[in-house]
Amino acid sequence: MATYTERLAQFARQLRFDDLPAQVVEDVKLRVLDTLGVCFVTTGMEYAAQAAEVARGLAGAGPCTVVKRGGGWSAPGAAWMNGALAHGIDFDDVHGRSIMHMSAVVVPAGLAAAEAHDVGGEELLTALVAGYEVLIRMGLVAPGEFHARGWQATGVCGSYVAALVAGRLAGLDEAGLARAMGQCGVFGTGLRATADDGTWSKPLCPGWAALGGLVAVELGRRGYLAPAAVLEGRWGLYNAYVGLERCDLAQLTRGLGSEWETPRASYKPYPTSGSLQSVIDCALWLQKEHEIQAEEIEEIELVVGSESVRRYLTPQDVKVRPPTTYAARFSLPYVVAVALADGRVDVGSFTEEKIRDPRILALTQKVRHTIDPEMEVYPRRRPAWVRVRTRGGTMHEHRERIERGSPENPLTPDGVVAKFFANAERAIPRQRAEAIHRAVMQLEQLKNVRELMSLVA
Image 1 (cartoon, rainbow, N blue to C red):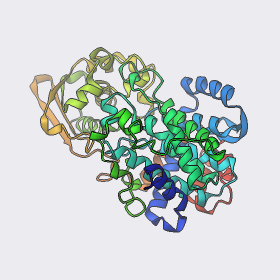
Image 2 (cartoon, rainbow, N blue to C red):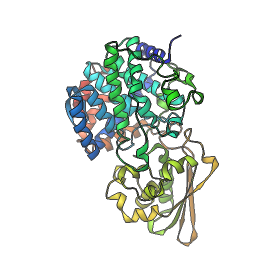
Image 3 (tube, rainbow, N blue to C red):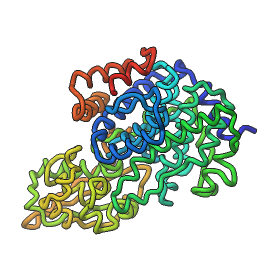
Image 4 (cartoon, one colour):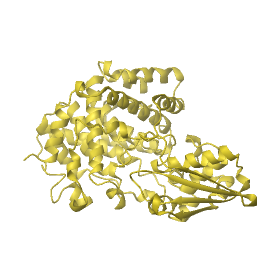
């Protein structure tokens, strides 16, 4: 009987562009565009400069491109750097139930492999869809279980899928793809320790997974022996990280090739955790509807589930006074405070100056929380409930049952495009951004993906 790696390899190898619904193709093109836009925001950040120095030194030269940093990179080096850029400010997409940041792994791995092997846009899109569909299902096997144990699921699972995407683009057969996936058991990473101090490790997870996948492809191409049951075996991924008794392995192939999960992933309207999108919408609605001024606020009450307390309200000192801009992205008190104080939340809300703004820090210290069992729905949904008490005792409150950007409350395609331009124009002229937009939205017509990458270089 075929192992799951063999079955997934068969799917990835046999999928054809003509098999893909038009809706899925158009959605993936938007995801490529969204990913590149985020990369343009992060490329000038300090963490990116340091990571780029290391990547250049370790990975060597080659034919591939890093966004805004030019060509001449090896495929693993480009995959690592573009992955780190894509996840640098948590503005990339996420599939809610599986908690997978798919694009930050799949797109960098695909672009690097496509450049390295002179692949066209149609073939790239097909490989990307295969990657999205498999990575999401890897998370659906055990929704939330990796995170509950302190792992970032994307980092742990991403290299397996990067190997599938890059391996297909490199021309590996099914056996070679299965071997490449088998090697990824030694490349898994992604401890969530950074969640408690806001340091810079988390953005590296998708990039490192993409790098691992490309290295695994080179081993698979050479026939390097690898475990066949790397996912389901007693020493495999799921038993080692979660425990097979808590997994539904059938999710790996259920509906594969007939039910498309990719369009069900969320685009983020705000550069912070997916679980905080709806609470920001609540705070912004209250601020606008009631014209609330920061100095009038006496108390802010958040009605939350226990998972929100664990992830976004503790350690209390870090969440009330975030020590870094990255820590601020995972602080419920901070995102609510900046929304109420400024009436907006965008890339500029997470700067060194902003996180030390006395006006905002005065509000973070007024945040209280109440646990409501009805809010214990993570990771299926991410609702929010905010109450604001102003001077004189007036209480204002608002609830959001479904986060904006999710499939049930989606950003429109025009909204995703607008997000891309807002991000890209932080680093490049409008004319260049328009050329990139045209190239991505006509990706299946490109004879060589280098036509696109020359525009982002």
